[in-house]
Length: 522
Ligand SMILES: Cc1ncc(COP(=O)(O)O)c(C=O)c1O
Image 1 (cartoon, protein in one colour):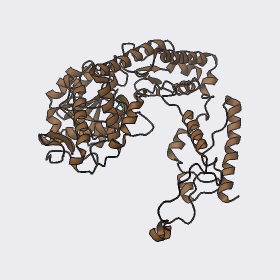
Image 2: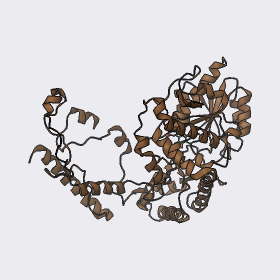
Image 3: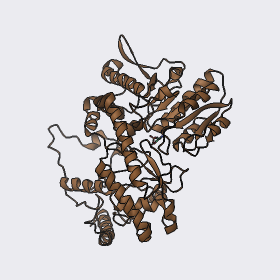
Image 4: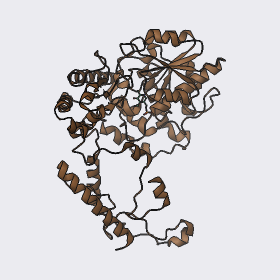
């Protein structure tokens, strides 16, 4: 057995030992090996057909520096084993096709598969972004139409598709505000941010060179008018409002707030990432908002989470349009163009015209649902959240007992008396087959459980989730240790979350091998 095979065997034995102990405790079946541990020298999953062209020796075409001296350490496995391995892995992590995923503020909903197919169509996915404009007329037409659809949904005059995430949309919004104020000879530097804002908001403000100033929420969980009045002055460049806010409440006074900000020549930015609460029901553009971003990877059919691609297009009023990043997709009698000749533009934000795969999914979603369908989506999001809120309230009291939007925030403060924290409740939910809600955010609710059921859940799944929370509340009183030590029925228990982030190990090496590089980076 060579060093590599010995390493694989040692890894397998170590992991099997752990898995058997775990299986006894949790009644889990089988072990999950690494694909490398399944490797059997000489086994093949695929064979190439015989060459029908003359074979050329690698030495003849590749310089020595680019040639391997030994074959790469790749696993040797049969095709069915590859399929089984990855199918087994896919069942270990929680995902939305397994069951409800109520991670507040993240909109972890089920997305139509047909839109995935469309985004992968080789006629679209295979387009080269540097192809000449004349060869890109189809996709440019689609982008132009999509910009208009988004502008209609949020009631704005123009849209930039460039931002690759919601937070980058916020950053773009702030850059546009800076450019606007500069063009008017203002050096306004302060952006007001309510304490119920999403966490990325203050970060985007700071990154773009502004100074954030916090505005307190009132007892109803919304921006306190008195606190706002005392925060506004001549230096106010604008306000950034998450609406619905992180308590899941609609900022009812947004028109009045906008008027006050406009009165000092400030601008209003709305974090519209949670547009599944508003589409077809309310228009940010009609509420006095000057710029708003949307998260296509939450609302419009691209799955959220897991670090996959996203898009956070920004809609703006006409006064901000000249500053939009280049290229802008435009149309004239000759066709569609990527317009870079915009002297007042802030410059480039994205190398091309945006994250096309995400845009394609969103375009298909919007076109297949139409205006009525989008409004129906929002209504379903609101009804589901309000239904669940009422069922959960008796187990974990809701922070603000009033009609919510697409999500609500409960508190697990009462469990402290039993030595149990909100994070324990969240972990115990995994044993019941559900993903955890967002915990400890927003900061203005002690021991928060932020719950977003999304519009794609049925009444049955909402009932099952509420029943699980009720059962956990009973366990907290009767058997707090069971909750404190959760999860008990997952492949691994509690992980050291800081260690996992600080010592990221993404590269396999046979046991007992490794180099300085490995030891440093883990
Ligand atoms: C309200 C709100 N704003 C901003 C963001 C940030 O979006 P992203 O993660 O795409 O940067 C999110 C993300 O879920 C959000 O919920």
